[in-house]
Length: 448
Image 1 (cartoon, helix red, strand yellow):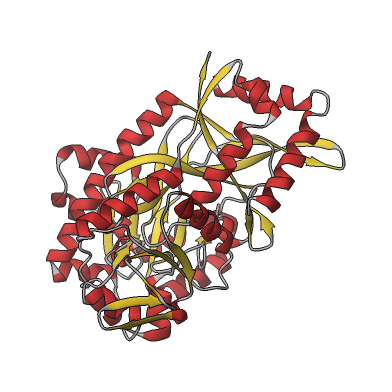
Image 2: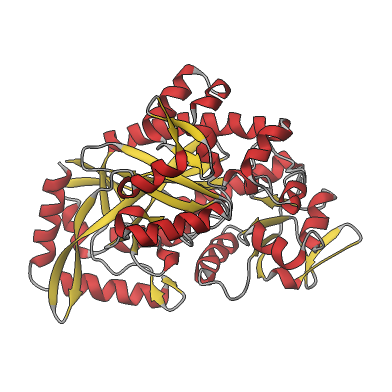
């Protein structure tokens, strides 16, 4: 049905001036509704991502099984120093993850990055539990596309459903605040560096917070102060910090001597996501999910879900491990099998430091291996990546080109999956913050 729906949408777009009108709407919305990442438009294609409800429901169910396993892993990491040592946390990170959250699951809002291949198989490759971006861009894009003329016509043949991500996020934020012990209408600070390219996304969310009646401010970490049991941004006392600043970057600049760390340690402010996600967003998480040596942490149903949806991942180091039931010497194995492997730094994000073995020659791969051995890296097996044709508008013409896509379920309270982020790219490394690609909204569709 999806191929038929895509073809029908493209036919509608090609009729009359429909593509020009869609392009004009997108250009106007990019400016008026802050849909830009730095200077670049977040979306530059003329079609959203379509998914059948049955496929979405399967992804949701399997995601929640994987989340159940991640929750168990989190509990084990917090309780077991030796297990936690496998995460390669720095001494400062070891201290920061011990700052109490005040609510059960530290990953209040997160994103499991996954690929759905052409045969319907999907696998997760990373857990963005630290500070996932893009949620609110996609929410606004859903509204832009939904009210476009082409989608209005499309909806006569296919029913459409999207997800109110800003509402989901605010509900999760407020629920965590109540669990933390909050009793009044909270004042909310969105905290990140002023120079980040996602600043427009903060403005989108601030508009939503104010529309819902919540006092809010966007504040750089340098502008926070803490005294007499109150965290402040200027004269405003803060009850909830929606923490978009990456914990590692804050530690690199200040160590633990920062007002946010002091206030959180004293229980003076509710910080979402909690600092414990510094463990879960590490790529080593996937080692502990995929290696049979840690299977005892999970029940049989979770083990089956992990085997199906988590690719083979190992800490990149000298020594022996298992691969598909066989004992292997890891370094020679990785050297020989670059075309099915990827090297990833344990603590980076945004695609930084990632080497795709199938996209480089042997010399570059072996150089990447040498650099990885000197640091904290994982090696992960390549997963299948789906692609679809997407239209763009250039010089009065509609151009179709195949784009790779990922399907990234959004996570709420570390246990529930609802909604997805979708990214497109002409390259196999799909990451908007890495400097390419396009975000698009997702719609569940059914034939009317």
